[in-house]
Length: 114
Figure 1: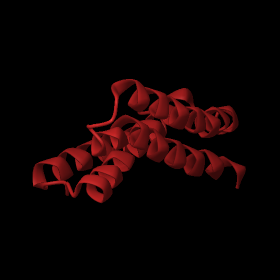
Figure 2: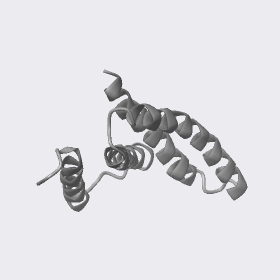
Figure 3: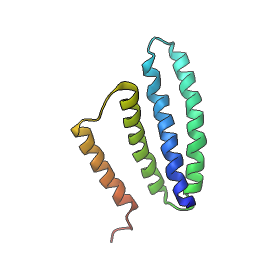
Figure 4: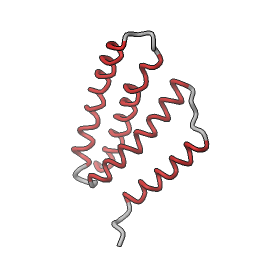
């Protein structure tokens, strides 16, 4: 059961990080220094999730698998933030690209080939 904790923590950390990266674009009239400061503040909470995710996850998953989880959740977090904050739904080409990325992720989690 503890092996599933990194999935939850990495999903949360990447959602927070995508908010840090793109949320400030909703208020372009605010000073850049304020956007940077707020993004750094959010990034602190992202690290509070990501570091334990990797520390716990390293007991159960390879580094390649942990990195793959992070990348997949980063893309999913981006889709959620882009859709909910900006109304940008992924088109067919983006969905096809995500399917290809998911296929690559499946290969990483598969037992070594050969």
